[in-house]
Image (cartoon, rainbow, N blue to C red; front, side, top):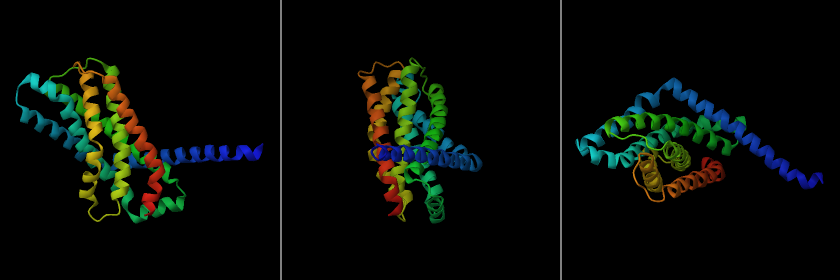
Amino acid sequence: MGEQCSPWFQVVEWVVVMWRDALLIARRDLTIELRSKVGIWQILPFGLMALFLFAFALGPQTELLRTAAPGLFWLAVLFSSILAAQRSLNIEGSAATREANRLLGLDPAGVFLGKAAAMAVELLVLEVVLLVGVMLLFHVTIASWLFVVPALVLPGLGLSAAGVLYGSLAGGASTRSTLLPILVLPVEAPVLIAASKSLSRGFGAVTPDAGRWLVVLAIFAVVYSVLGVALYGPLEES
């Protein structure tokens, strides 16, 4: 009986170790960001400037601004997420950091989840600030928090998982700073569409099947989280 249960105990032990390492890595990355203030002085201003430029490009037409607000909001978040993914890649990208992770015996799946979680927290803060900016610049109001909250959280999780995974894929290339956007932007196009539709419903627009778009966002986040857990280790070793 004990022999039959042993594989399950091994799985449980691996899950516990994975999440322990994930919390360790997430705390490390967030601590580095708080001390360096890269997010505050670079990523956040970039997203706000993108919103300002979008608003100026559309002009003072209030109705047009309201209609375009969800899509332009997510364009600003999407472009900012590339900077956040590159920053995450730089933290983990040195050979010394990777060797330190190996010496500490950190589980690669836990490293992936920790980095994705840290990036998701950064993106959520960015989204809240940009949401206030959209409300001021594009004259929109929140009609349904039941759609706005998942329309912020789910895309943040998906963008973070995809960004860390493709960042690892581009990590060994000498042109990784320009290769990462080329790899990740086409993949994240469904997030842009689904998140814009869901946020439109949150802003009060009549959006058919808004709930299904939230399901698409959840599936995207789960798929890339699972892929990251399975592939992050082999990609780091290659």
